[in-house]
Length: 484
Image (cartoon, rainbow, N blue to C red):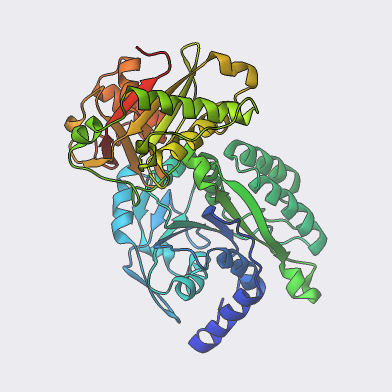
C-alpha cells in the first residue's frame, strides 16, 4: 500500500506535504516537465510534493504520466485502456481522445493489462486530483522493452501535440539498493546527468555510470525509468528548458535504522522561458488569444502609413538602436498614427544578409513603442545572432513590416505567395514568415509552408498538409531604408 485508502487520511497527508514544500518556480516561466519519485508516501511523498507545489496554481488540463513497467515485459509504449482512474479523492478522466490522436505515430499501443498493479503512475494520481480536482485529464503511459524506441522522435511527437496547459510527469526512483553513503554519491552523479538537459550527454553519462556502478555496492539500477528520462531529456532540449533540482533524499533519511539498503528519490523540474521560445520562432507572443483578427486584410493594409510616416517609423527604429549605444536621444514621433495599436516586425540586414528579426503580433503598446522595442529586440535579443555591435550599425539596413490583424484559414490554397504572411501553431510550437520571405527566397506555396513548419516552428513539414496545425494569414505594409 503506497498511500492511505481513507479519503480524510490521504487528504491530510497530501496537505501536510504541500504545506511543508518550498516554492522554487521562477516567475513567468513555463514548467513542462517534472521528474518525481513513486515510492510509498511515507518514503517519497514529501519529495514528490515539492514538485507538485511548483504547479499548484498553474492551469493544467492534461497530465501525461510516463514511467516504466515494474510488472510486465512488453515492447514499446503502452497506454491504459480505461476511461477513468479512481482515487480515494475522486476520479480522474483518461484523455482517450489525445491517446487516439497519438497512435498514428506508431510507438503507442493499447494494453490495459500491463497497467494493472503498476504503482509508479498510480501514486501520482491523488496529488493530481487534489491539486487540479476534475479539471485535468491524465494520459497513463508505460514503457516496456525500450529496444528500438526512438527517444528523439517520441519527444518531437510530444512537442508537436502538447500546449501550455499540458504537464509531463516522469515517474522514477533513483538508485536501488546501495547503502546510504553510496546512494548519495551515485544519485548525485545521476542527477547531474539529468540536469544536463541534453539527450546525448545524459546517455553518455548514464552509460559510464552503469559500467562503473551497477552490480557493485549492492546497486541494482541507477534510475528505474531511465528510458522515460531519455525522452524527457530530448524534449527539454527541444524546448530550450533549464533544469532545476528541487529536492533530493533517500529512504535512509526517513528510516535511519535502514541506511544499509536504501532507494534514492529526487524532484526535478525543467523550465522554459516562454519569451525565449517564442523568439526562436520570430515572435514575442505565443498565443493567438490576444491577437487581433480581421476578415478583410487588404482593406486594413490600405489604411497604412504614408511616405513621411514611413520615414518617421524608420527613424524611430534607428534612433532606438543608436540611443542604446549612447549616440543620440530618442525623439517622440509627431504623427498621430503612431499612437494607434498595431503589430510590427523589425528586420535588420547587413550587406543584404539577415542580422536580426523580431516582431510582435499583440498590439498591447502603441505603434511607436512597438517599433522601438522590436528594433532593440532585433538588434540585441534575437537568439539566432550575437548582439549587434556599435561599429556594425553604419552597415545595417532597417526594414519595418506593419502588420494587419490575422485571419484563421482552413484551406492552405487561400495563401497568396508574396502577399500573405503566415503564422502556424501546433501545440506549444509556432512560427511565422512575413509576406516578403517567399519572394526573397523564390519559394512557391508548398516550399514556403514546408520551410515554415520545419525551420521556423520546429514541427514536421507535413503539418500544414495533414491539417494538424492551425494556420493564420496576415498582410503587411513593408518599407525599408533607402527605398525609392
